[in-house]
Every structure is written in structure tokens, then in C-alpha cells.
Image (cartoon, rainbow, N blue to C red; front, side, top):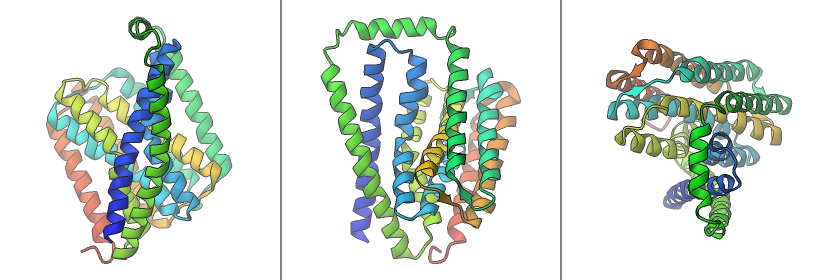
Length: 321
């Protein structure tokens, strides 16, 4: 048991550190190559911040633990829109951008509904994973084209700042990328092995571990980032960013994982956890529309929902209570 805990926390630490290194190194190199900051944010940074979930999901699927794979993604999405958004709103009320209502939420809800209907037979197939990747590429392309003019001034400012460095930090950025890749690879391996060991020790299902421990662990970067941004009064894009993470989790992580190995989906995840994810995503809409502000009251409601959901997951599992 103690060894499993060490692997779990060590793996989590290395995962977060690896993802941070990958984002820093990749973003700096991409911006030095004069790529749009918007493109970097939607591709490299989005991939980097979701890379813990991706590596954990692929590792779990290949090791014959599909409930860890699906539970990690569904649990992370619930965590993002209930726990992370709730904490952020309590720290400081969040002003909602128009694009979050018109574009991000419909895409988040649409991706979630599509996932539900595709896995009703109990399997996410390889060609369905290809469909997810196609939708992700189309969505990213649409947002890039729409936002190009709006971000031109910001893009020029960032380019100038990075051009002044004269590439003197290029080697450091390459080292960051290499260290990030190693961290993600080994961290995901240790994290999954530790989680499976704990599940076996307590006699709980891999679905419970995936929904709770793995989901919370791999969502820590989003939780820390959103909390810091809230303290700094930089919450304008918080909802859009969290929903973007949910879109990426479904379309990219499940898409890539199912292409590598088709994912079995248990009845419990299909009939309970995905329904909770859909319900919380639906609940977010009236909160966003009402006065265009998600306040502290809404944040408390979201935290209570997350606490109740976690309690139900644990209380329905033998050997927990």
C-alpha cells in the first residue's frame, strides 16, 4: 500500500512538472518561429495541459484498464466544470464572454452528447476516434479563422518580445521539451500503476479510482492555474478555457486513445457518470447567461454538486464506507 501511494504521488508530481515543461518549451519555440499565439494556445498549450490525461488514458487502455481511461476523462470534465469553476467563482466572480455562450458551450455540450450516443453499445471504436479528431481539427480551424483579426495586435506584441531574445534561450526550451516528454511518459506510468494498486488494496473498482483519484490528480494543473488567475483578477476567459479543456479531453484524448486501442465502456459509466457530466454541462448555461456573471453563489452550488457526486460514487462502492 505504501509503495502504491509513493508511486501515485510521485507520478502525479512528475506529470504536472512534465506538462509544465512541455508547455513552456513548446510555446516559446513556436512563438520564436512567428506562429500565432492563438494557434499556440489552441494546439501546443491545450495539448500540454491535457497531456497528463492523455498519457494516463493511453497507458490505462493499453494495460487493460478501460474504466480508468473513461473514468479519468469523464471525471476530469466533471471536475473542471464543478470543482475548478466553483473554486474560481468563489475566489472572484467570473465575467462571461459572448463567445463562451455562442461557441464554447455548444461545442462542449455537443461533444458530450455525441460521446454518449457513440458509446451506448459499450464500445468506443477506432473510426469513431477518427471522427473525434476530425471534429477537433475543424473546431480549432474555425476558432483560429474567427479570432485572427481580434488577436493581431496581441500577436505582434508577443512576437516582438520573443524576437528580442535573439534565440539565446532556444537550447533551454529544447531541454524543457525533452524533460517534459520524459516526465509525462514516466509520470503516467507510475501514476496509473499506483492507482491500480490502491484500487486492488481497498477492493474498489477501477472506475471509482478513475473518477476520483485520477480525475482530480490530472485536473490539478487546471485547478491551480484557474485559482491563481482568479486571485489576480484575470478570470474573463476562465469558463471558455475550462470548456475548451473539456472539448479537448473528449475529442483528443478519447479520440487518440480509441484509435490506438478501442475502449470498452461499462454500463455504470454510461448510465451514471456520463449523465452527470451532461447534467453539469447543461446547468452551466443558465449560470453563464444570467447577467453574464458566474458569482460566488453559483460557485457554491457547483462545489456542493461536486461534493455530492463524489460522495455518491464512493458510497456506492464496497469497502469505502
